[in-house]
Structure formats: C-alpha cells, structure tokens
Image (cartoon, rainbow, N blue to C red; front, side, top):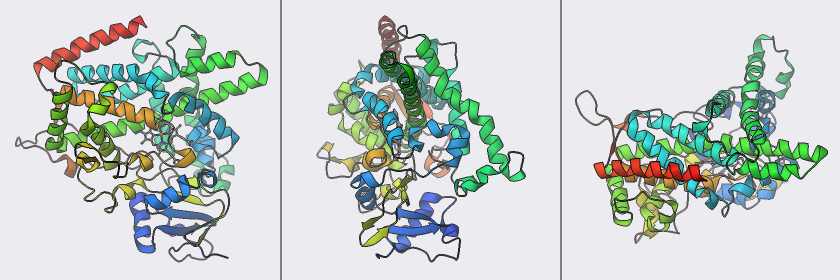
Amino acid sequence: MLPLPPGPPPLPIIGNLLDVPMKDMEVAYHDLNTKYGDVVYLDACGQSIIVLGTHEAASDLLEKRSSNYSDRLFSTMAELTGWNFLMGAFRYGPQWRRRRRLLHEHVHRNAVARYQKNQEHQALRYVRNVLETPHDYLNHGRHLFGALITRIAYGIDVDKSDVDYLGIAEEAMHNFSMMFQPGKHLVESFPILRFLPSFFPGAQFKRDAAKGYPVVRAMRDVPWAASKEAMGKLLPSMASGMLRRISQLAGEVAVEEEEYSKDALAAAFGGGADTMLSTLQCFYLAMASNPDVQERAHAELDAVIGSHRLPTLADKPNLPYLCAMVKECLRWRPVPPLGFLHASVDEDEYRGYRIPAGSAIVNIPWAYVHDEKVYPDPEPFRPERFLKDGKLDPDVQDPSAFVFGYGRRACPGRHFAEATIFVVISTVLQAFKIAPPLDEHGRPVDLLETVKMTVGVISYPEPFECTIKPRSPMIEALIRATSLKSNEEEDEN
Ligand code: HEM
C-alpha cells in the first residue's frame, strides 16, 4: 500500500486532533505545509485531512481531478440551522447538480452580459449615495450589492418596496457568520452530539440553531413568494424565467422544481452579497493607502473616458490598469483566506502518496497569494504586477483561478462578480479621490498598520474611515445628471 502524505506524528485515538488549527487557520495550515511539504496529512479522530500548500497541488487535485474531489463533508450545523438549502453545503450528487444547473443558466460567462445595465445603474446609485453621505460608504456598499442581486434574481427594486428584503437577508447572513465560525461547534466534529436534548447544558448550539431557523428560511422564501405573487408584473429576472418554466410543469415535478429554484436564488444572495462587499472594502483600503496607484488609475480614466461621462463595462478592453486593479483587489486580501473544504469520493494516488476516500481537502488562497515564486513581493498592493507593456500579462497567474475555488465546485457567480467589481470600482474612481483620515495632529493615519482583517468564512477589513471627495465640481454635476437620467431610463423598462 502507498504511504500517506507526511504530517505531524499522531497521538493514540485522537490522532492529530490537536494539530487541526482552530484559529488563524490559514496561517497555521500554511505553517504545516512549510514544515512537511506541499501535501500534508492529518488524522482528526479518524477523519483524514489533506492540506494543499500550493495552487499547483490544489489545481492538480481539485481542478484536474474534479470528478473525484467535488464532494463536501456532511455538516450537522447546516442541517440544524436550516442552511442546508445552500448549494455550497450540498454533497456532490444529483441534488446539488440540479440546483447548480439552475443558477449556472443565469450566470455563466455568456449570460452575465444581460445584467450590464443593472450593474451600471446600481454603480451610479452607489456613487450618488456616497456623494451625499461619504462617511456611510460601507453601508451604501452593503445596499449596492444586496439591491443588485435582489433586482436581478427576483425582479424586486428594494428602494421602491415596502418590505425590508435586505434587512431579512442581512439578518440571515449574520446568523450564517455566527453559526459557521470555524471550530465554534463541537457537533461538526462529533455529529453524535446532535442527539443531546435541547435543554442539556452542552446543547446551546441546538437552542441557537432553532432560534435562527425562521430567519434563515425567510431569506429563501420571502422574496421568492413576492416574485411568484407578482408574476408578470415585476421586472424580468431569474425568478420570472424560473416561474415561467414551473408553470409548464405539473404535480410533484412542479413542486420539486420550485424548491430547487428557491434554493438556487437564495444561494446567489448567500454567495454573492458579502463576498463582493468584502472586495469593495479592500479596494477602499488599498486606495486610501496607495495614492500613487490611485493617481495611475485616475490618469487612465482621464485619458480613455475623459470627464464628460462615467465608465461602463464596454470600456473594459481600453482600461487595462483598471482590469489589473480588479485582479489585485481579489489577490491582495483574498475574500475567503481559507478556501471552502472539498472532500474526496474514492481513494486516489498523488505524488506517490495515498489520498484516502472521504478525505477533507483544504485549499488556502491566503497562502497562494503570498507565494513569492508566483507573486514576487506579495504584500504591497501593486496592480502593475499583472501588466506588461501596458497590457495584461497572460504569464502572471490570475488570482481568479483560486480565489473563486476549484473545479466543479468553483464559484458559479465568478463572471458576474468580476464584472460588477470592475464597473463599481471604475465608477468610484472616476467620481472620487479617496484618502486616509487625519489623526489629531492632522497627519494621515496609516490604515495598513491599524486596520486588521476579520476572522471567518468571509474575511473583511475591520470598518475604517476614509476621506472621499468628488474629483471636481464637473464630476459632481455629472454624477447627479447621469444618475437621474439612468433612473428615468430604468423606469421606462
Ligand atoms: C468576489 C466575489 C466572490 C468570491 C471571492 C467568491 C468565492 C467563492 C468560493 C471560494 C466558493 C467555493 C468554491 C469551492 O468550493 O471550490 C464559492 C462558491 C459559491 N459562490 Fe461565490 N464568490 C463570489 C461571488 C459570488 C456571486 C456573485 C455569486 C452568485 C451570483 C456566488 C455564488 C456562489 C455559490 C452558489 C457557490 C457554491 C457553489 C457550489 O458549492 O457548487 N458567488 N464562491
């Protein structure tokens, strides 16, 4: 039999349980790779864990052998909390595939062009809001991504609705981040604990899960019910297409299709809103800390767009520096520092080692962005690393190859996310100059020193202030005029 990959020596019964990191997980896993090599083996009470220390190793298994590495481990907490409708939690199989296909149909590479007007419109609304209350740029950002996804998924304009759809979704997402803090719930490692009666002292997780359950289901059911009720009256959306298809089915098949459709759309909100918000926050942090980068971006916008209009997605091919900046935003502080766990189906062999069936496979975007061989001097925010002779350099590793995950489980919203981030950051840069706040002596605050990243499945910079000012009175007038025109255009649809 082939040997297992190297790793720390196991203890009797619990194996490497004490070596499995519970905090600073990406750094701790990376340390194991530094000590034992690219492919590390841990045994946590009988659960095999394989830690992949480089993008190359992750890509070899999770991408190139995707048919064997696209499973997920069963999550007791997903079941108890009601989050088991999320596509990302499904085991690899027909139930997952049905939901994935439904979403894919609306967000694949060629489909996303249809959302261009919505993306540009929401970017305009956003800069208009930031113009009025710049210190609220973060809340406006949360509203921007929530409103955009609710609009394209359900055809609902949250700004014209009496129901607080974003409040419902945000409460659910808060529940998600509370319930799925890495290492928080012992029941994830010992599923037997789920049989503890709720009133037992150690069963707080059961009481918390039950309390959050209605909040979680509301995120999935409330906007769908509104779309269904207003069938035909709301703006075209993913839901309207799905409802049309369901209306042609009957009986059990129609009921099933409706459940799959609800799940697929809720997964779009669950997967898309906070991840894009985190990227926007990193962008502000990078801009406020790197005036030279911001100046180069402004110069490109001035040369290509001028000062009489705002950029659109059609300008993308002519804005290579902005394109490089999107890549650097995704690379610099990867949204999930630790990738989502995959699981293997069958036993496999890799680099002469045995990978047991049912292993949990860890990928670590945080380590891959810091790989000096791939990204020399990785710490500074430098869009230039992706450019050669003024064009995107195809020889530099695109971080999208790993920050959006791998293989058949790779993020289905990737193309939508990249286009949205492009249009939002180029509109913000056309509109504003972003600077760090000043301390009590009038000196710029070093945000890179003071702003830490949060811990969790999705990592954000801790909230921070920055100074956001219109680049000129002309730009300010342009934002107000264009924004109004765009609102009128949408109302005519
Ligand atoms: C910057 C933005 C985003 C980032 C960094 C991101 C990242 C990720 C990652 C790392 C995964 C796990 C992939 C894996 O298991 O290998 C994932 C899965 C997923 N993402 Fe995204 N995502 C983003 C935006 C979006 C958007 C806009 C949507 C929806 C329109 C979305 C929907 C999903 C869904 C449904 C899954 C689960 C896929 C599955 O398990 O089959 N994401 N995303």
